Image 1 (cartoon, rainbow, N blue to C red):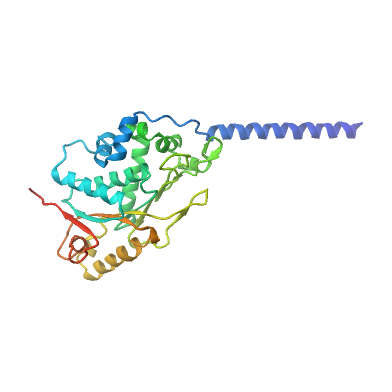
Image 2 (image 1 turned 60 degrees about the vertical axis):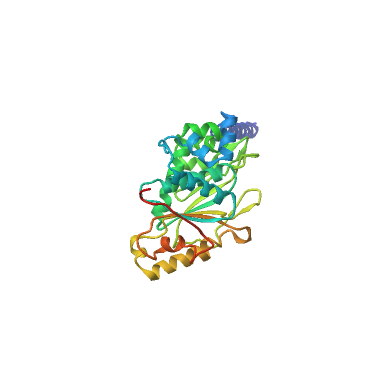
Length: 302
């Protein structure tokens, strides 16, 4: 009789433990589940943004672009748009403080949100300079109400992290992992079926870092390689005045950056400032030396 009673107690304990574990898993899953994605707030505005980079800047980034456009800005926007939509190489020089980096940040954001490019690399002269652009994108996804209203499938999962990157590993959408990523040098969009930006990647790298062979494999087996590179001011003050360093960085752009996409072809943008004659920027802007690049320069004063 005591043996039967002891076995019954163990059975009850195992049943209670299993029930407790099941409730714990249910609470955990409930806390990780992001639920239903909100609908697009304004379908007409979203359609305008898809067709036009300028419209995207004005509608989704009004606090960045709050002044009127100059003719130079409008030309740069059109060139950036063409570069994103085709396998083109663009180098454009504008004076410091005129918004060239802000424009290229907007272009890369537009390219990923609309699914034109699912893997974008931001390449700076140093790791910290490339991460600066990535950090600005993180702020936009978390704080920009206009962006959240028009691109909820991208912004809502990031907002659901509530500023806690460690939650990314367990995030669920209708019971399935989103595989969202929120790292120091990489952003991975949530996997939301049917969304053009599903699974897109934004990676920050220094020009002299490990660029070759860069790829990401998605949960469905799709292998993504970079198809758009943003080389923001890829020279330092020291390298600009060194012919040897200038040549090394040009070779890195030509061989490593341009080779990231493989046979698919690559789009690349280099917003730059000329520091001295024949520096990296000056050479890329020279159509005779580099006819494969479309070089565009603006004057300090028209």
